[in-house]
Image: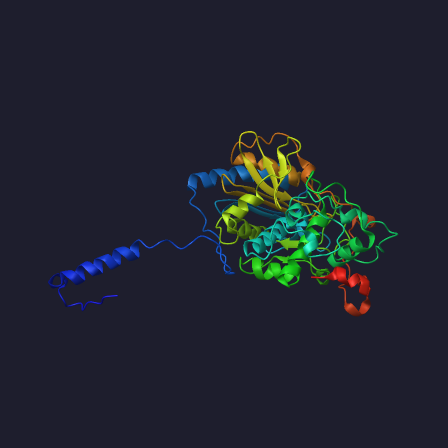
Length: 446
């Protein structure tokens, strides 16, 4: 660097003047900072994009009318947020966190995302792939030797083409599992090692949605990272993105987590399948989900080539507008439009999360009182932003899980049951943890 005294006429020294000019030009033409992701845990969401005030007002008005008519006025209890280019166009919180206590929902109320948790598991897996710690072509037997499913890779878990049966069903056999005990991820692994449930089909021959795939992915993430899955997501996703009200539920959270209710308002008690994660059990808010959505546009977390891989359809045996990528559902329309999304259902929780890539529009609906209109409303809202041809009812996107627990019936007088007392360790209100013998301990590898 050449420094000049302020009272020195530069024209007396043409060589230094030329050198100074070259230095300035060189600095101004330096390459921009790389958009390639690094190992830094400071992910910066993109700033809201420019949107004309007239367009913003028109979209906000249309969304208000649409949701008031289709959802809010039809028994909806939950949160709605719709944004474009990161700008919130419509946001509404309707009803109560707990219908028995009448405590109003707020923008910090976290909802169970059910299977809408799967994109987090998928992206956490791709983060490890990006770091070179994992390959999509790795066999699952690399991490869990002796697992009775040869030929199954990490990719086949992600896109539901593994042929591994759904633990929700095979662990429902009361002869093989005591349903007074909560099932955890290590329990699923131990059960597979012990009982060896038969695969449904040869790997990579067709699509079959199985929650076991994502329980196994969470176990692989734990094994590769050396950290519990909830901690890994907190340290590598939720924390860096500023998702302050997002976490992975574990059984210790049962006393404080938001509850759900059936369509009639009946309280839905926990059942024996509450303790697994990877396939479900992320809790979040609409505003946190928007931060997550926006971060995926920056390439600061996952590079674009891997995102393209995640948003690619993998099950093409039959022609359909519905497909599945790596952790994401895809709606691929004849006019070239594509929606990247994931819906879910767990008890009364009915989340919908959709990303309209062309318009950079985001639709987030989180409910804790079962309402099938959520799914249809989310799909049909696409047409507010473009020609998505959503004329038909399409409520089948809710993840089908075997519900072994019926909602508690209302008490006489149409009053809901009193909320349960807070659980304490000394009263033994939680099911005892399943003890795994030394022969089963190998299945508990992380």
